Amino acid sequence: MKPRLLIVDDQEELRTQMRWALVDDYEVAPAEDRAGARSACAELRPPVVLLDLGLPPHPNDTTEGFLTMAEILAQAPDTKVIVVTGQGERHHAMQAIGAGAYDFLCKPVQTDEIRIILKRAFYVADLERQVQAASQQDVLTGFEGILGTSPQMQAIFTTIRKVATTDAPVLVLGESGTGKEMVAQAIHRRSARQAGPFVAINCSAIPEALLESELFGHEKGAYTGAHQQRKGRFEMAAGGTLFLDEIGELPTSLQVKLLRFLQEQRIERVGGRESIAVDTRIIAATNMNLQQAMQAQRFREDLFYRLAVVVIHLPALRERDGDILFLAKAFLKKFAPAHHPHTLNGFQQQALQAMTRYDWPGNVREMENRIRRATIMADGRLISLADLDLSSVSAATGLQSLTLREARDQLDKEMIERAHTHHKGKISAMAEELGISRPTLYELMDKLSIKRP
Image (cartoon, rainbow, N blue to C red; front, side, top):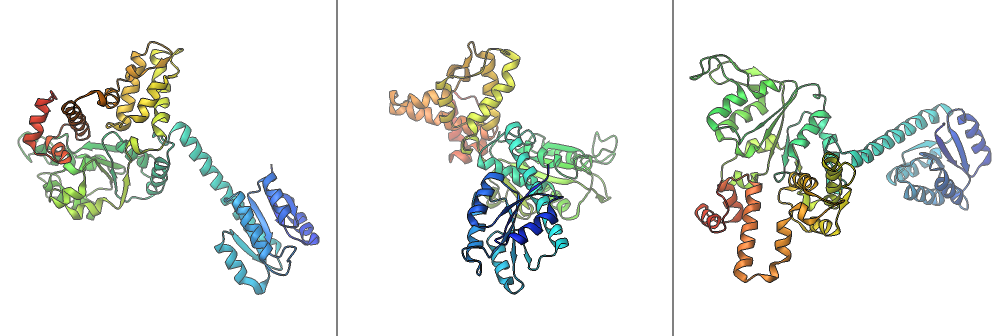
C-alpha cells in the first residue's frame, strides 16, 4: 500500500501536476482550502502534508496557510508538514519551521527536490511510528522485563534507550526493591556491549578484606592463600558491563582505585605492579543518600561526579501513578497458572483497595512476593485481603480503636520495620534514617519484639 500524501493548494492546475508527478510513489489526496485540508486529515490521517501558505480566502498572504498548519498539527502532532512559499518570502518559511513545520520548498517547485524531501519526511514519519508501536508493546509486555505504564516509568524507559547508546557511567538511585539491577541489565542489553558479559557484584555483601581482590583480582603470592593469579570482576566484565550494587558501601580505600579506573580505564591487581587496560563500562547503584554520605566524608565527591554522568532516579512503587494495580494483575497472571491454572482470575474489591492504600516499603520486590504467596494461599476464584497478608493496612485502618500509647507503638514498629527493609538490617543506616541513636534503636526493637539483625 502506497504512503498517503495530502497536497493543499488553491491552484487546481498545480495540484494536478503534483499528483501526476508523485502518483507512482504515493497515494495523493488533494485539498484546496483549510476546510478541505481539515476534512482530509481527519479522514485519511496522512503522515506527510504538502502545504501552500497562500490559501483562500486570502491567497495573497500567509494567514490562512498558518491557520491550516496549526489545525493539522493540533489534530495530529506527528504529521510532517512541508510548506511551499515564494522565493522572496523565505522569512515565512523560517516562521513556519518555528511553528512546527518539518521542512519548506520555494517556488517554483522542482520535482527532483520535492521527491528527496518527501522521501526523507516519510522515512522519519515511519521511524517515529515504529518507535511508538514499540513503546506501546513495552507497556503490554514490559520494557526489557521491567513492567510499568506510569509516566514516571515511561520516562525511565526513554532515558534507558538514550543512555544505552553511549559508554557513559550511569548511577541508578532508588529504594530497595525498585529494580535497580534490572535497569542496569536493560542498559547493557540495549548497548553495543550486549554480546559481552554482564557482571554484577554487591559491594556490601563481601567482607572489606576480600572485596579488593574480588574487584581487581590478585597476583600469585599476593597474600596467604593466593596460590595462583586470579582476575577480578573488572577484567571478567571486559567488553561488557560491570554493575556495582550498593556502591555507597564501598570502602574509601577502594573508592580511590575505582576513581582511577574511571579516569584512566586501567587497574592494578592486588600484589601486582603492572597497570592493565580494561574496556569495561560501569553502572553503579545505591539506596543510600550519597549527598549525606559525602557530607559525612564517607563517599568521595570526585568519585560521585565521575559515576553520576547520567543519574537515573527510580521512583518508589507508591509514587508510580496507576502501576500498583497494573503490576498486581501482571504478577497474578505470572504466578496463578502454577497453582490455580483454571480458577484464580482476579482480586476481591477489598484487596484492590488495600493494595492502593498500602505504602509498599519493599516496592516491586515486595509486591511480587506477596502476590506469589497469595496465589498459593487463595481458595476461591479471587484473591482476598487475607491472602495478601497486608497487616499494615489492617493496622492503619484500626488505629482509631487503639489507645495513644498503642497507636504510637504501632507506628514505631512499622517505621522500624520499613527502615529494616530499606537498609537490609544495617543498624547504622536505620538509625540515621529514623533520626535516633543506635542504642535507642536497639531499645525500641527489644521493646516492640523486633528481632535484631
